[in-house]
Length: 481
Ligand code: SF4
Ligand code: SF4
Image (tube, rainbow, N blue to C red; front, side):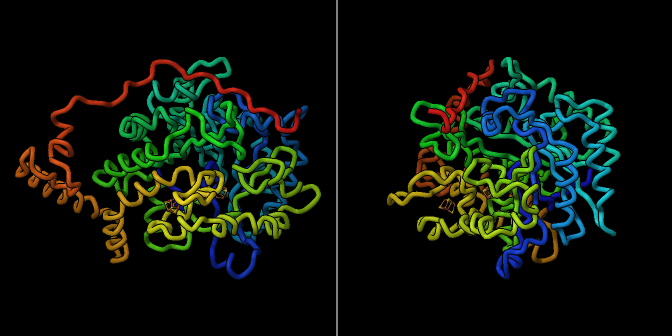
């Protein structure tokens, strides 16, 4: 299967930022829009979904993009692009709730306004539960790239990805995924990493690689901000819910999967975070993930009624840039306000980040997660900082090796032989080290308390969950007394 690894990918609001363009002037030649034709409406009730509560932004709405809005959106998207490739990305809520005819019309509108030589990349992020043979035939015929959300094997997936009645959805999602495979529709897998599946990195990775059979995956951390009473509070939350992944846990999750990947799967399996890390390690202009770029602002979100927001993660009244019925989309994306939004990612970093040795790889990650204080009390540090620091330090050596081989005109694949050699040397050193001698890893601990411990102490891995977690409390409407 071909992978479009350079594509901006919807769920992380990935930007197609080109720093050269941004440095010259804010006149974006290509930007990325996540369109939500059903708004926040979804057929499922995943417990950590930050979009479900967004219904309250549009009380009384049908949450249905009209044909007029569709026409206006596609025309403006084309008008605003001077690049030959235009990405049309659909997300939700659950975008398949619009029905297949809506997407047939979308293709007709693209063809109506397409300029000579223009190419469209159609993408759709779905929970997969409503896919049918008819859907998949259409998606294949129109060369769609599908993102399908699955959180790991059944016990891990069903904890949070549930129906509105609270039943697990694993079987339904897998049925949709197998349909995509049967029809050879190109797809990627998106896994949200929460406090439960975050404890099972290898189980998740091996399930996706071996059982699902995917070769392209992305891991998105669940950081669900809540108020003092545990109610979701989006950008105003002062702490995080129990479902949220812990910073160190996320770092460990990524590092553990990286260790498996770098020994076995380089060049075969694409893990978006690792791809982005290699790109930043090489000093390329864009990591391919907005969260790991220095600036952002070129990935906007379009609601069903034409409202345009600064980013998929900032669909909040204070980040509404305008409505495309009043102001052309290109103008809104090119506005000073949106420029400032994108530059603030770089300009608002605390000193702790400016001094950080892995800033070139992390860039403070996404501003939505910057709500804790640095060790010296400065606000604006990323909640996941500790995890990212651990991860980027952990991968530093193999990254150096990959960059060296890639710059020498090879691929990154030889890193696997390098790791195998390292492992052989370490095994020899372990065999020679006594249980009471210093561990060969250099930790300063006795071997029996460090790398020798796992062979002699009972497995402390948690048990897999057996039932869905508690439902999510509704968000408090800030606009009501
Ligand atoms: S705020 Fe910026 S970094 Fe975060 S998801 Fe949006 S575009 Fe990406
Ligand atoms: S690892 Fe932490 S300190 Fe370093 S850039 Fe990222 S968020 Fe900032």
